[in-house]
Image (tube, rainbow, N blue to C red; front, side, top):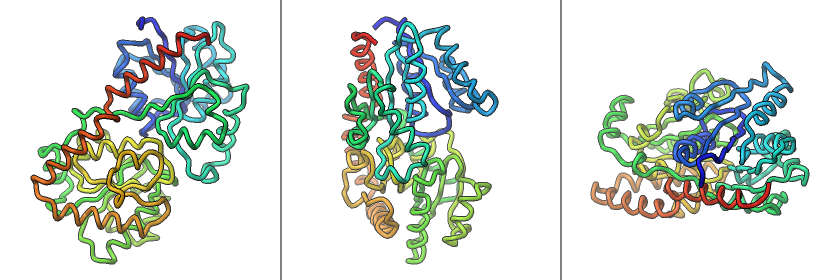
Length: 382
């Protein structure tokens, strides 16, 4: 495909999350194939700086300062450098991409990138629900829809999204970047004074739908049973100055029992130190953190949302969302399996899991599918 193919990505915020990490990896791994740029409705961020370091321009349009003029500024950018593909990311970015794309001449191919598979739409904010329904209207029609999970495709069929051409492109990770590493494990555990104690962590941004309250309820139940493990929350917003999190810790009497690490800049340099990684979300697509943790050798416990069941092969490690007792039992089972596992058995388990996951979730598979999708899209009129 010619390198002149221009792709503009539209995203609302560039925080530290799975979608933003997936965007970064797509830009990093396909910058030799396409000419990318990013329009971000928000302020400069660390991951935005990482994207710019790749040589990809990032245009920040701060809606707090510009207000509705954000739309005009975005349209100016696109008219000055019309893309062949205009790709939105997540619901707000998708709707914005369609609105902008409908005003471009020559027309761009409009692509939506849907990263979620809501189990209960009424758990979403009212504005998100409105955007989800509005985006499905014919006036906002995209040329193509990309889902990052089979569950996402199934969920959005009921909203009318699947009347447009679509494809599932599961998230991909680098299995050379994410790997079990004894040196990282020793260094990180020494840094946090873990020693030989079993270490259980939840690594995600703070958000009500991530199930932090469910994790804390499970931790409370485990501690009441005398579980000796260390428990940690890590990610954006997982620090003491988050009043909502502090209130939850007080509610479960866990202020002295759960370590708060805040944002983790490089998960590949942290996850090998864990014994059990917990995902307690109410909704996901293809959770990057499960893939990364398993590639790094950690056991995982997850709610049965999104495509978690395609990632976690052991059914006893999957629980229904919203059930802290089941979550506690699954964590307890994972800790018992960890305690009983020899070094040889651990090496064999990790090798088998990496081989299974690599077939479907390797970055190379993901990126080639993106290339093929863009090639197919550009063969048809916008």
